[in-house]
Length: 266
Image (cartoon, rainbow, N blue to C red; front, side, top):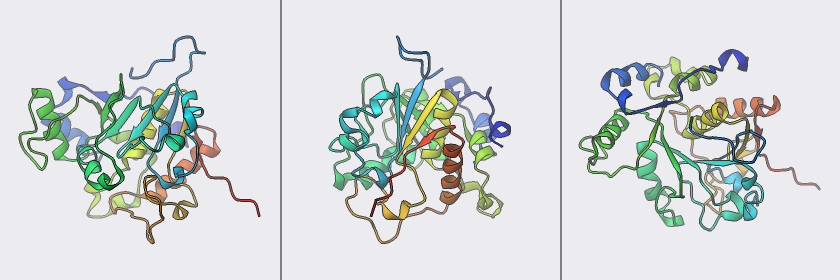
């Protein structure tokens, strides 16, 4: 099943010469060499993909980076807050994946928890996952060396990014029934899913943390939250159950390792 869906030769990133209206229109129908082995290692590229799920709160998986540091690269997404949470999520960020919406809104939504901005680690790679015309407007300003000149994020200052060319791959693995509705154009995988697919296509060994597991209702939506809300927030344009089932299958087939909390012994 996975062998048929996997496209080994797909181009992962778009560069400035590819960002034009024609290319955007082509990609919209699917809508909806970054990492190298560590010198002195065994030649394998090891990646830790760190999501924002509440399952990481109290996990101690990043304790002194003893576990996450085993990965050559740490990939993070959206509200990737590490300060104060190093014991659970580590502190190093190699690749940060975002959309225009997430990089602007995350500081607003998570301000009360102390989140201020996207990570700025030395040597970090920023990867943008375009999801709507507002992202094209964001990239247009970036490539012209100006602030955003139109759309909802007008006058925003951008950080330099790679552009993620992964709409087709995501839908080969996550073809949701929601795509058959009249609102199909807004249905897309989560930013976390895109980050995971990026890692699976560029890394030899992938460990994932902070993604949905069967017992996700026991945890808060975000690891920065101390308490579990009465109702988990699931947005209609994502198919969370479909993603959950795919992560389980990839874990069971040993294609990646999915972090799951151990069951408590009685």
